Amino acid sequence: MSRKVILSGIQPTNTPHLGNYLGAIKNWVHMQEEYDCILFVADLHAITIRQEAAKLRAQTKETYALLMAMGIDVQKSILFVQSHNPKHSELAWVLSCFTQFGELSRMTQFKDKSAKSEENMNAGLFTYPVLQAADILIYNADLVPVGADQKQHLELSRNVAVRFNNAYSPTFTVPEPYIPKSVGKIMSLTEPTKKMSKSDENPNACISVLDSRDVIIKKFKRAVTDSGSEIIYREGDDSKAGINNLISIYCAVTGKDLPTLESEFAGKGYGDFKVAVGEAVADLFEPIQTEYARLISDKTYLDSCMKTSAEKAMRISAKTLSKVYRKVGFYPL
Ligand code: TRP
Image 1: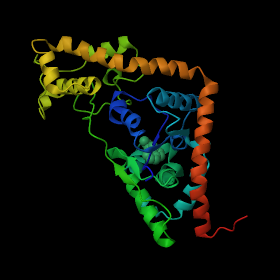
Image 2: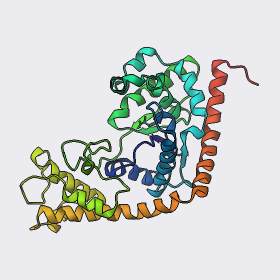
Image 3: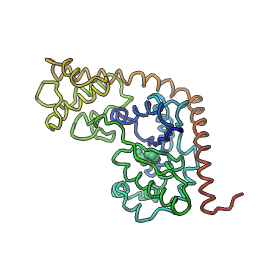
Image 4: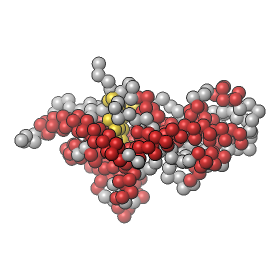
């Protein structure tokens, strides 16, 4: 039996943080054994918001190298840069003719973004979910890992796939959401009732995968907790959100369970524990940072990985696209 295809895109505009790593990317590393994984750096999606060219180029390379450093293995998975495979854009045009204006108008992400960037209300911001549907359907992906913000886009992809299949004959696999085993949400270090986010105004709220050991430990030392002192997890108690978050992080990073952790830190205070969590996170990121430094300085190697993967991606997507062209009635040459 062939393996299921799981697919996702990651925008190159933000360095992944601790929450992204524990909640998503770390899973990919294990999923590579079980699934055919297709991952890409979504640079086409990134330009719906104005980007500085040199910066986008650099960030694309950095994101690619970082995904490799975090354990995405280009021998096992297809890891490519979206704009290196023009088939996505070609399919997106066809699919846009199978997507209703009204459907796109209802996308909450479009409503939010357009409310924020009135001076750049470009059509790409509006048709973005169609490109995303093309990203997914062109590989006949079975599964797409989704966070809350992408659920509606996946639903649209499913509707477009079904609509096309019904108009012609079965063409696309209708993708299912993939809900990963929950790690528990990683919260902000400064406002622990909010999710950890790279766009947080307070730089101490968020740990980047590339933060140095000193910075990581300093941020954990400053993490907001409460006036208590016991290292005990109290489910659902908002006044304990800070210490609960640190405990979740420590367990996720070290693989230890709650009883082990609670006995390890019995009699110790928040201060000691914060340093321990900081050390554990720094230890986790150290090998990733070393590998990243090696990769980012080896452009020849990175380029060759991008090229091999883009070719694999194109081979799969060319098949889907030619089927689609035939079904809609384009005259073949
Ligand atoms: N839209 C996604 C985001 O903003 C990125 C993305 C693009 C994606 N194409 C995709 C995710 C296809 C899953 C599947 O994060």
